[in-house]
Image 1 (tube, rainbow, N blue to C red):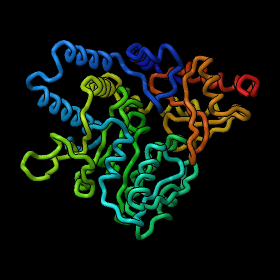
Image 2 (image 1 turned 45 degrees about the horizontal axis):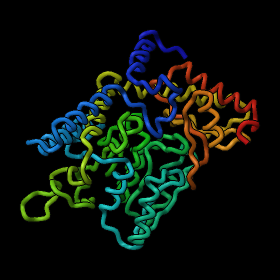
Image 3 (image 1 turned 90 degrees about the vertical axis):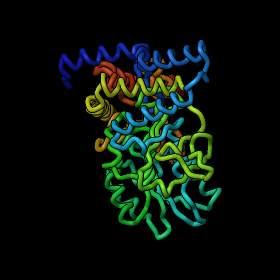
Length: 397
């Protein structure tokens, strides 16, 4: 797999801005991505200013509001939305809860999802069941490689209100056909709520083209931001169907009537830590301007496919991730070793991955292949997996 000299030089230069990837084989962006120096410096500058000058100097409220809307507008332009359709959140889970809890539910209403979803989506669905009597119907989509739309469609009934799925499955790495899922939903007058925690920053996202109603993104993963950052897209036509769950100062018009603020800002919950927002804004700008997201998506897909290819050639390794459609998440198991053992033993060898072990999802070890990974690191991780197979269960039990 040859990637030209110019690309090698670009990767080296960008890796220099990510100190964490120089201390370990960094293959766990599906949990937390590496933070670029520009994000750290932006957070540090804001934290220092607040320390030295105070946090509530004249104009602070207006400046913070303007900053948040500026950030939302930048994110909207990157992800194919309008600025007033993006709300800031503290996590993808918060965004999913905000969208789902903002709908009006009746006992017996149904939501369709899959067996491979993250708890960040499944737990809000469980809360809806407990609080309102909403029924969750599961579609068996296998590894997500084929028949997804048909499986979801087979679960639709006259009581179905929402299809709630991930764009990229955390447990198999499959990229689901969201556009086709949305077309199915429109045919049945059903809304689409998407867990985008593993997609934004890993695969192309054009929200208007995808035609979904709500899409929740995580800042700390593929967008290389700090914890407590995220974004929620709500389609303008869906504002009337998704009400704000919380009422707070600044979120509603000061008219004496209970009128939500214009646009998706109405969905923002609580206060935002200014250094974190500054860091996420700087990281996203860096990804757009210096990294080039289109280049990053292509490199992630190329390296992800290469790592998967190497794993499939190792006897004793079972790859859970389909060859198509996939990006950078590669889930696998090793005969005789638990996913926890695989993760800990690879860490001892200088490679940081994670394991997925939450029912009802596929149980596996998972490597997140990032654009910053080198070809040598990808080959080295595959070789380390092969070494674990050769050694059997002697080290991990």
